[in-house]
Length: 260
Image (cartoon, rainbow, N blue to C red):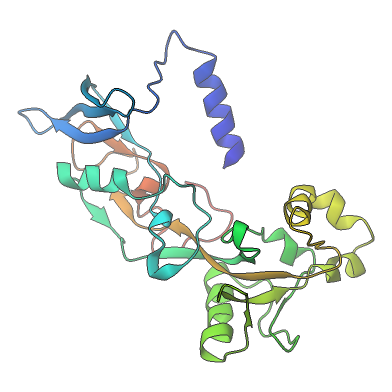
């Protein structure tokens, strides 16, 4: 995802004569013409506190999901702008939504330290040999189950069976036995394959080569969104949706490795 975003941003910046970027000017309402077609939007300048109208033949909603609403109190892997604004803009304009009750939880989000709560710990850790262990050091689920199965197993182990580990702030999680990777693979494997993750935890004096990570499912992906067809068209002419703002691409259960 990050690579795709960087590539797109580079292309935009390399073509200033073709693309006009308006920063700190979010859309606050979509505009429909007298035929019911989306004709642009009303923008709010956060610096001058003025409103502007932008007319468009085609409007694309690519505002992402709503992870930062922290549904049911879960931490999230999402950026701070993922608050569902684009969904409400489309809904108020008359666009259809679907599967809004369905979200995906990534099974291995960081729980401790609190400064990086929700930080995504890639599936590659489990693929390399890391195992989820409860407070007694017991493996309670096969490490490479699909995300929904792995997540529900971790939640059940912590909430229903009371086999989780409490953090000083009251969060709960299970161990992800990362030191086992070095034993199964080779010394230096984590530093070579997961350098960014190693640095992230070392910032808080946790060496994941020697100490396990504390993890719990993190709100990761919004399965629902604006209903679209195969051309990303909504039921409103001139309004399109793409990415996590669109709904129905994955049904109610997004599998790992899929892209919008």
